[in-house]
Structure formats: structure tokens, C-alpha cells
Length: 242
Image 1 (spheres, rainbow, N blue to C red):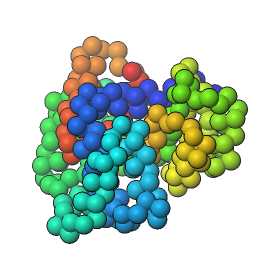
Image 2 (image 1 turned 45 degrees about the vertical axis):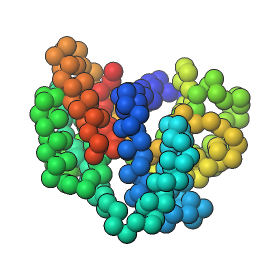
Image 3 (image 1 turned 30 degrees about the vertical axis):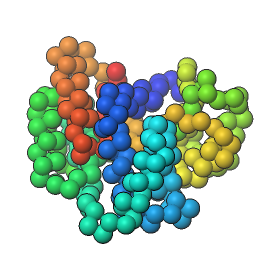
Image 4 (image 1 turned 60 degrees about the vertical axis):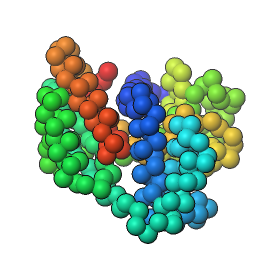
């Protein structure tokens, strides 16, 4: 059992993105393109693509949109090559922020990310400056209302498939895996017809920072909003305890 909902951080990020469905679909579309280029267009032989498809479906992306994205990435030799990059930095009062990007223009993205940090009262740091404060983990969230199994049964399926930890929160179950075991655990839950609210490899803070100053809170929200509005930004992780 967990004393603090790690889901709060992810939920905030998702709600920010869901303010514009087009943003979510842009993010997932780029992930599909990268997964296809790295491992091919057949999900049966590409676990990364299977994971992205599962993420797409959990965000209500239509099947024909998913299929078009796969075919476009597989069939167009001149399609855009996205480059992955990660930025690390500090928000107000020393909050730690990690930004994952996929872009066709690194200069544009770097400028936009720096601008967001500046306007949010923070600054971009060097590689590794805050990532040591996070653990890279697979995280699967199951809504209690959508789950017909009891906690013990769900926990055993997850642990038998290789999960590291199982937490019961007020409204959901949280399953944590090592990054390399994420696909196997997600697929085991899928095979058991478990509906997953969220399923992705993410960065989970080891400790959390509280912001009590209203100006700091305002700036932190500004920073997160600017980053989440940028199409080049795939994900934002932070240790602000909201």
C-alpha cells in the first residue's frame, strides 16, 4: 500500500494534455512513427509498437488513425525523422523537472523549452542534474470502478508477470514494473481483460517538493502549461507535490 499517490503527478500531466485532444494524438503519432522506424510495422514483432498502440487506445485514438500512422511511417521513406532529446532543469523553489521531446528541429525545441523554463521562473540545467532524483519505471493505473477483480487477484496477475510493486489508492490500483518488464506485465493484464487507465514507462520522483508561495505555484503552472502546449514535448515529469 502506498502513503502517497504517485498517480497524482501523472494525472496532472494527462489532464493538462487532454485539454486539447489534438496534442495527445500528436504525441502518440510521433511515438508510433519512431516505434515503426526502430522495430518495424508489425506489432506482433515489435513490443514498443504494441505498447504505443495500447497507449493510443487508452487515450481513445481511433483505430483507423492508429493504422494510418503505422502505414505512413512504414511506407514513406521521406517521412519526418524525429530526434529524441531530454532536458532537465529546475522550476520555482528548486522543483525538479524533466522534459522528453521528439522533434524535427532541435534548435526550435531547445529554444521553446528554455523559454518555458524562463517564463516559469526556472532554468534549464545540465544533463543529469535532476534525473537522479527520479526512478524510471513502468507504471500501470487501473481504475477500481472499471476492474471486476479484487485487489489480491489483480496483484497476483501483475506480480506473476514480473511487476515490482502493487499499490492500492483510493480510486485506483497502481502497478510498478522495471522498464524492461513493462511490456510483459501490460500484456498479461491485457490478456486478462483488465482495462488500464494509464500504461507507460515514466519517471517517478523519489521525493516530493511542496510549493506554499502563491507566486511559485503560479509560475510552476505557467511552466507546465507552456511545456505541455508545445507539440515537440512528449512528456513532462516533475516532483511538485500538488
